[in-house]
Length: 148
Image 1: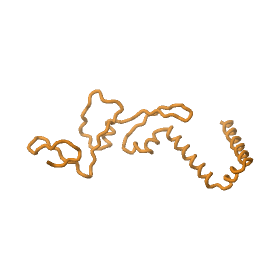
Image 2: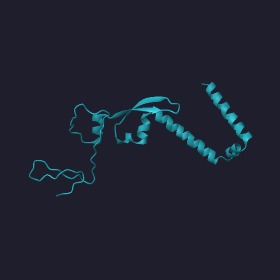
Image 3: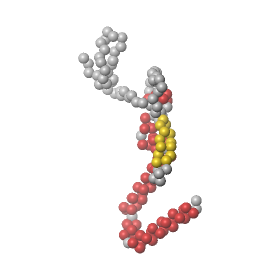
Image 4: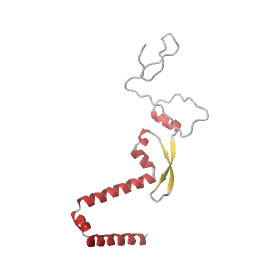
């Protein structure tokens, strides 16, 4: 009996159908591409590429994101190719995730400044300098809010 990697039973050559082993450079992908189960399962033939499968099924998912204040926001993510499943593919589709990514980048810049800026580190060591810096930041925040 031959060894098959994907399971099943061997069908002798005299039968009308035979099972062949997948070539080593191929991958069999079986995945649910719709949110809801189909009312009546359908067999779709003639799809030759992954792009054709995505085009036929048009998979999408509705996501609900929650922000730090407890609010929520719904967005629909669409998947047109395998690249849409990665971090960049999902982030590019979502305004909420784009904003979070921008905040993350800003936080990283601030952390880098705190670690490398010697003057800022010295200012934060002394209480009176620290208070003056905090007052200046609060004044800038107030000015930004007033100019909206």
